Length: 315
Image: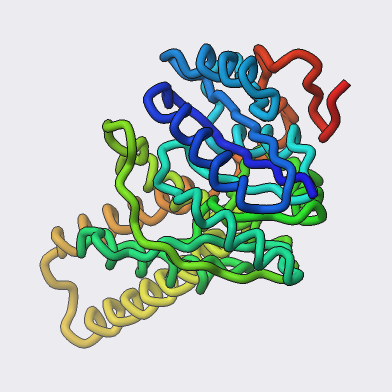
């Protein structure tokens, strides 16, 4: 059995060699052949140079380098495309995904599971972040067509048929966490505790990126926001109709009173805000259609190790 370990990398010069050493030493305990597919996502440091050196020392370390930063989703897609393994593991380069879990994941895969998900517990997280995360997943799971687990990220083992299924879905706006759930297949979860990021530095997940990621999760697998706009519009129209009837009745019974300036301004600003909100939702979906219609590649490769070829083969 050949196991491929796909590692998206962006400015990981401080930890990449440590990650490769730990992964290879861990997998010496397993009866598998190993390849590491290191994907450089437009790093500005010496990540690519280190990848070259790792490949020269050990041909099991393969690498793909993008022409610029295309994002983690593109890096994972490229890694899956270049991976040759009978099973593929996706993990981060900063050692927050513990390599020792690979042995347990392989054992469970041997029992017939196509997806072995490593789910991070939230012990040690800030209370506010934990609450917001749980609320987000409840909202998403109530709206989307697939079920997504809180704490289950990209760290997982995928069988070859699961990888091939993911590669068949070439949409431009990718939300891998949802795609993993959408393909199905027998799945099991392994919990692990938080691990501190190695090599210093801060997480690349800023509040803005987390917010955009959350919106992607809501909009990638359903048209619920559009339908919600219809419902809210119908409710507001109904309330407005009732309000107008009330004004007419009041005018017939008591005559015309002084104009309601505050009511008028509140109605105008409220309706204007709703219209802009609905236009934004519609615009988001139209923008996604626009990008899908262009059919641009998800990434451009600047360099690979000699002989590398996408599609799971080397010539």
